[in-house]
Every structure is written in C-alpha cells, then in structure tokens.
Length: 181
Image (cartoon, rainbow, N blue to C red; front, side, top):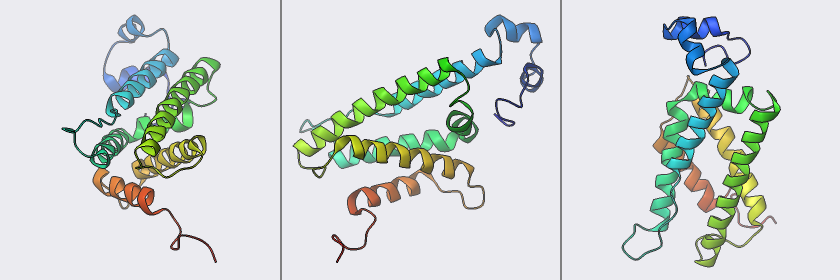
C-alpha cells in the first residue's frame, strides 16, 4: 500500500510483514491474489458499513440513520487511506477479473442506492428527479471526497466534519439561490 501495486514486489511484501516467502505462497499464489483479497475485504467492510434505513416507528429518524451510514463510510475511508488509493487508482484497468469485480460492486451499489432513493422519494425525504443520475453524482462525489480526504495530510478532516459537509450539500445543494435568474 505504501508504494502502490505496480511498484511492489512479493519480496517487498514479505520483508515488510516479516514472513518467509514460502509462507506468503501458502496463502497467495502471487501478489495479484493478495490484492484481490484486500479488495474483497474492503468491499465487504463497505457493505457492512451501509445499513438499510429502518422506517419503523421505534427507529431513529431516517436522516440520523443516513448520517450514521455516511460517517461509517468516512471512518472506513479515512482509516485505510492507502488501501483507498489503491482501490481507486491501481485496481481499475489492472486486469479483466478485477475490473469485473469493480463493475459488480458498483452495479450492486447503484441498485441499492437507486432503491433507497426511490423509497426516500416515496416518503418525501428525497426530492423528485432522475435517480440514476443522482446515484452517479453521489458515487462519483463520494469517491473523490474519500480519496481527497484520505490523502490530505496538511489539513486532515475528521469523519464527522466530512459527514456534516456532505449532509449540508445534500440538503442545500451547491447553488446559493434556488433558481438561476
């Protein structure tokens, strides 16, 4: 994670984690398999961080639950900045299998988010509009926010600060006026 995928050899990995080369090969046939395991584990942690909004009367308000989801994602991204960089920069285009894994993850995420937005629109929490476009904007923005936050060593932000700003943007948008003159 320190050097990036391409610049790192198996020797670098075993030296860093202080295991014998043979031990590495007991678990992984090559560094590509290790990368796939890291990607799978990170995707699993992302999936576990996102919880469905509970609309039952005893549940916390939907906005509180949304905030909690966003903060968990921010914590994850800030907690593993090097893995986040590898996932967003090194993995895409590396090989067909990893590209398929990325497409599958993002396709499932898009479906989940579109369904969530549909429910949000139904209950009046989300404005009407093109859900597919909203999801694309949201995923793209979050990827950039997480990557920037994870690599910003001069003025690091906390997960709470990032979450608060995302929610301000969600609720107010970008423009100062509701409609252009």
